[in-house]
Each structure stands twice: as structure tokens, then as C-alpha cells.
Length: 445
Ligand code: 5CA
Image 1 (cartoon, rainbow, N blue to C red):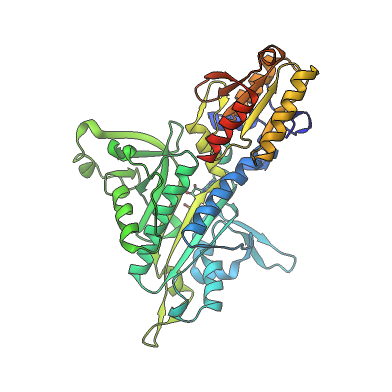
Image 2: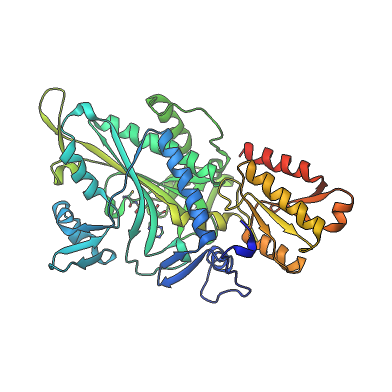
């Protein structure tokens, strides 16, 4: 992409309405624009990161054996009456009437609809286990939408649903999701700690939330600092292996880590004092096992091995896809702007031409641009006739992890400069070396 043709409406001033850094930076970097309270348009740069995050979620779901699909955002109230949640959900549910005066709603989650699809098409235990998911817009009429995409009214969510014959099978699905989520967040450069939580309107007893530690987080959390030493890394997982999923799940969930809803002071005090931490966190996902709550209410049964009908065991699993942009920025920024982790960066490398119009500098930039593109990487080339200071400030604000600076002076000695956004460290090298270095970095990312 060439900056001269890009739609990147960066703001010079800090917007007054933004109370936290991620909201401020997303507005300043031209990623989103509010259209009404808690509802945003995603401008090209924001949309690009949203898609990167979505891609990672899809890839990791596929590895775990889950199937993507798509359900409508507008649903009939009838199904929600069957489960009893049409009334229970309260004011967070946006209710709509169609021209025939029928009650409709904008989906805040989709347990009812997926259960209806399941009961219409699956009748035998032989078709289990089954896990379906979607990434779709949701609407919750939050009392206090705030912090930009963190607590929106309209937000983008991955919601998945498992159907199993027995509780044991459903608990394996739960563990499988926990493991898969750990890997998903790590690929985005995040440490998200699974914490025992409260199930709220979704229901059920077993539930974990995934929290990213950040001062601006909305949840108060209590944990044993040893949980922050755990990393998933690049272990090989067989998601069908019940014991392997269970042992990884235990590794990550046996140490004390809870949100304020489930916090137990006496248990917390058993953690050695020097490891006890109280902090704030951003909830980027939650998994639930709720047994037969929906399958009983909606009569979702299959024929069991003995020929008798049995209600299926279910769980649901969510990732706050749009909220993740805010969480990543909260966890990775400095006073100049965003610092994208390599896994989610909108463009792999920025090219800054210090003297646009200089024949040699222009030619060197063009050739870098072509080489990166040919290598399957996406460069963002600042080809505007602007002073260098302004170009650097924009690059720092939008936060690409790597920048190549090209100027006539360096080119006289055959070199350009490669700069890391994170460390600020710059190294001179030939353009060919710079291309090779950046290719190497992303080959490993
Ligand atoms: N049906 C279940 C699992 S699919 C469910 O709805 N879970 S949830 O309520 O926990 O939502 C899943 C994730 O969506 C949350 O962990 C959070 O990251 C994100 N989320 C929830 N509400 C909002 C909101 N108002 N704005 C942005 N993200 C949200």
C-alpha cells in the first residue's frame, strides 16, 4: 500500500472522549470512527487488523477440529422464549419488531439458534462429538458503552458451541477449547490468563475467563504470580488426545487465578505472600460448560447407544475479536503510539522515503516495495511529499513493528536503515540485507 493513496485519517490531537490509551490510539491512528454510542465504523487500518485477528482465530479453530459457519444477526424471539431467555436477558437485548409486528432481536449470543439447528439435523449419538462456531457481529445494549471497542454495544465475537453425548466428552471439549485459546492469544502476542469466573446469563457451573493484565482493565483479578511464568510455546497438540488436553488445562488452571466474582480470600491466602498479586485485567474470552441447560429446555436429544433418547451436553466458548484490538494496544504501546506484535500487524514493514522526488531514493523505495510484495509481505510505503519528522511520527503512531528508512545520503554509501518499533534500535545495511532480515523475521513469526 502506498500512503499517498491510502485512507488513513490520522488525528494530530488527542480526542477528548477517549479515556484510555487504546481508544485514544485507535482514533488517532485512523482505525475506527464512532457512529453512535458503542457503535463504530472500521476504517481501512482498523479493519485490516480486525481481519488479521479473525484469521488467527479461524486457523486455530481449524486445528482444534471445529467447524466454521455463519448465523444471522437478526433472530426471531420465539426460540428465545423456548429457552426462557427472552425475558431473562433484560435490557441488554435489543428487541425489534418487523412489519408484521413479529418480535425479533439482534443476537447478543447464539445458544438458542445453534441448538435449533442441531435438533433439526442431528438425531444419533453417532454424529457426535460436534463443535460449530461462527465469527459474527453481536449487539448488547450495554448500560455504559465505553473505552471504544473494549465495551461496545455492537461488537465482533467468535462464538462456538459443542454438542456431546456425555459429560466427560463435553469436558474434553471444554479442555480442548482452553488449550486452543491459549495458543490463539499467544499468536497475537498476548498473555491471557485463564481464571475461574462466574457464568452470568449464559449459565452453567464450569467457566473460565481469559484475562490480559492491564491497568485499564475492567475486572479486578487475584492471582499467584507463578501463572505469569507459564507459556504455551510451540508444543505439538493432538486435540483428540483427552489426557494431553486435560494435563495442559491443569497446568494452566491449578494455580490460584480468579476474578473478583469468584475470589476466595482464604484460598488466596494459601499462596505464598510474595507471589500474591491483585491487579486489573481485560476479559478477552470465556468458555462455559452448561450441561443440558439448553438441550433440556429446547428438547435437543439424540438417540443414545441403547436406543433411548438423551439430551446432549453442551458448552459455549467466546472470543472478543473486536475487543482484542483494544487489549493488544493496552498491552503493547508507548508514548509515541501503538507497537503491533508481528502476528497481527496491519502491514509487515513501513518504508519511509526521506526525500520523495529524489530519483535514487524513489527508485530504491520502489524496488524494496516490489521485493517485499513478491515475497508475500505487505509493505506500507510513505511516498508523500512530507518532512521526515512527520513521516516518522505517523509510522510510530500506527505502530508497524519494522521500518526501513531510505535517503539519498545513506544510498551514497549503499545503505538503508532498519528500525525496530519496539526497541527503537536502528541498523544500517544494504537494501538486499534489509529485505532478507525482514523476510526472516516473518518466516519465524
Ligand atoms: N455465548 C458465550 C460464549 S460464545 C458468550 O456470549 N460469552 S461472553 O458473554 O463471555 O462473550 C464472549 C466475549 O465477548 C467476552 O469474553 C468478551 O471478550 C467479548 N465481549 C462481551 N461483551 C462485549 C462488549 N460489550 N464489547 C466488546 N466485547 C465484548
